[in-house]
Image 1 (spheres, rainbow, N blue to C red):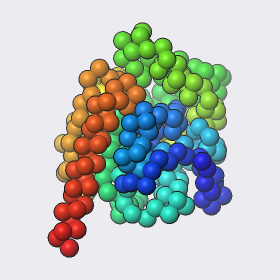
Image 2: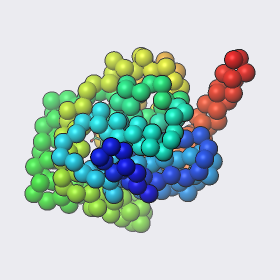
Image 3: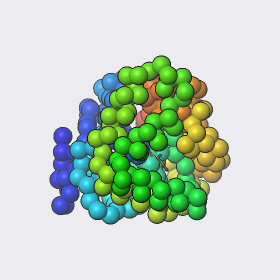
Length: 272
Ligand code: MLT
């Protein structure tokens, strides 16, 4: 499906008419990284998974920041006529966008799911790494898949699950060099969301793969300790993409969270 908001056409997937859950993918992926969530939960909750600007089937533009990506997501909800608060789930770079979405539109967020992500900005070393990656992608877009794949999954999955690894590799190869460079620049320049954490006034589920090497578990623990109403689900035998590597515990954590939230909403109404 695709949708026009202003002058930008955004591609997205949508599942049913229940409680909306916006699923924001990581870098350098697209909405199809949520395939196993659509399969398992698509009829229980309304999953909406955009391809962020510069990724998948959405358009690429030259330069943008996290604010633009968050605004694109809000624009998508607007153009779909969704004005009720939604649960916003972002994985890794998607988490950076989710935090930015909360900063800009707190009234549109019923709950947050922060998966395989961190609140901090890039360190000086991290920024240097982005520049090196930009140079590498400009020369050969394929290098990004070769660099990222070993970090996305546990060594066991890399060795044993050729189909899953191939699936993610193909998603990465479909992204253009231009789109990847814009995203790397946006991540490099993103603001520090650490000060925002204490102000998050909605229930927050943090999910993290126990073996994540790209973003260590300590980053999830930091968010857990700083967000007033947060819980942490640690997924065993998973690295950076626990939604694909261990979909059962990942989906269970989200379903429990949604159940708790929907209960909260009912309680709220009872008191009105
Ligand atoms: C991601 O998985 O979205 C990225 O690796 C996050 C990052 O590079 O900071």
